[in-house]
Amino acid sequence: MIRVLVVDDHPLFRTGLTGLLETVPDITVVGQAGDGEAAVARTLELRPDVVLMDLNLPRTPGLEATRRIVTAAPDVAVLVLTMVADDNSVVAALRVGARGYLLKEAGQDEVLAAIRTVAAGGAVVGPGVAATLVDRPAGHGLTRRESEVLALLAQGMSNPEIARDLDLSLKTVQNHVSNVLTKLQVRDRTQAVLRVRGLD
Image (cartoon, rainbow, N blue to C red; front, top):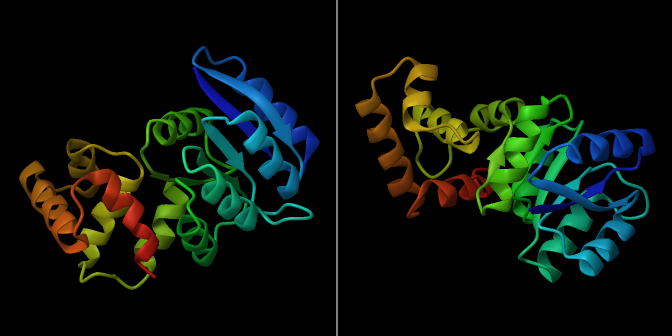
């Protein structure tokens, strides 16, 4: 069972999201918070597996709350769920330790998949967000195509799915993934996605 804390300053959104998550057999909502201070306190009290974190919060902003949660409870995965789509916020959130970044326009299945991915130790960057990362200047010597492949890895896509999405052969995608891992000096796909933090 994945234990989730829902953090958002809009009561209606919090209640709606909680209601949705409570219908899913492998997820349970252990608490809610309406501001950043409460988010940190509730996380340390309840020790959820995943914190769904909005960025625009009163008292303590979501980025600062995320940083404090990750520092105090590194075993808790923070998944940002926000309306804020600018690339600086995406990179900032990943840099302070968020495991994932989704926009509130994401579909139900996408949110549930992201929760399960970060709970299992993976990293997720939603499609609308991944595009902003791809549009940034390539870092670590990545070509634009390799940056595109990395962005799709961040969405949790498999090599065959990436091949279909980019209209490439599976062998070409495998080569790109291998190049990305080598250039980022990481062992696996999850580490590569987390290394997106350094692409600014």
